[in-house]
Length: 349
Image (cartoon, rainbow, N blue to C red; front, side, top):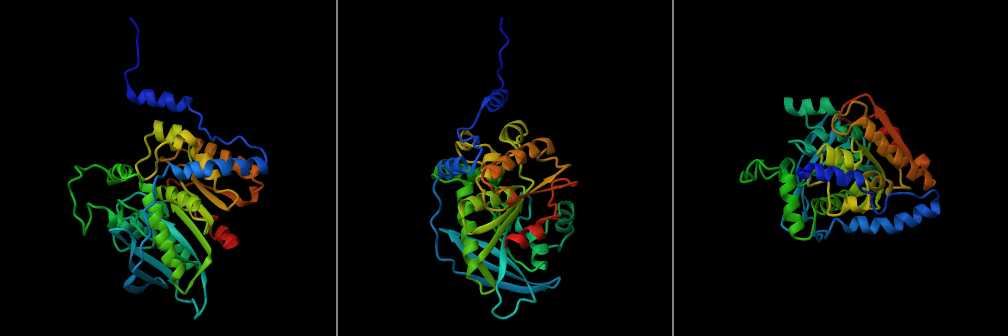
């Protein structure tokens, strides 16, 4: 009698542990890096499927108010066929007539409130708790530092979660809209990432049209799922000159297959066949990249998070861009460190 495995999860764990991606980075110099990136990046972008077509933005200002010395605006813009998004903007009251400031797209992560706490909405105990726990209001803090910051909800979050007001669709049987939208998207030849990137590009187009924004000095930053979107926005849009990925460093074998710590907004068909997450982050090189890792993060464990970062570091070194990569290893949990961001964006934007 033989004892055999009948667990599908065990099968996937073994397959992941044995797998080496096709474009696993092995280069040692700039010429080899350039060759690797030229070959890998189009294949990686190709896993996202089709990108939704752009549409006229048709912006409408819904409200403007003051909060903590900032001017805040809520717009609605069209970001694709049959879909709009609320667009939040924060800016200093001190911006002079004709003055242009660098701008940062602030990507939210998972959670019930989407962009709201990131942009400084602290109007309820629940919002304040999230801000305090994760230092989550980077869109507010960076605006206080003089940047124009902007954000939208990714599909499945905040005002674009179908379970929330004003949509009130409750026929998902408590299933994650993240995963349901991914299934819908792939049936149509797209992915959640390609849809979100298209919507993020539309938001960036609108931000660049505003008189106070210097479209030549754009950054992007985000925590967790927002780190996912920061990475993909950077890879898909050359306008972003500097990026900060917070608490989204690890290796697929561990945080994905072992820990099951991923969902439909983070994946694309065949992505791990091509690259690991460290390779994906390394494709940002030679553009400036700041990585935040929490020493006590329970989502992305510090041992494999640092293994990922060290692999990214080797890529930046090969690209002759070691000075463009920084690490904020902070003592917190799953949160924005906030120790290097102000100097980092100040230097590169």
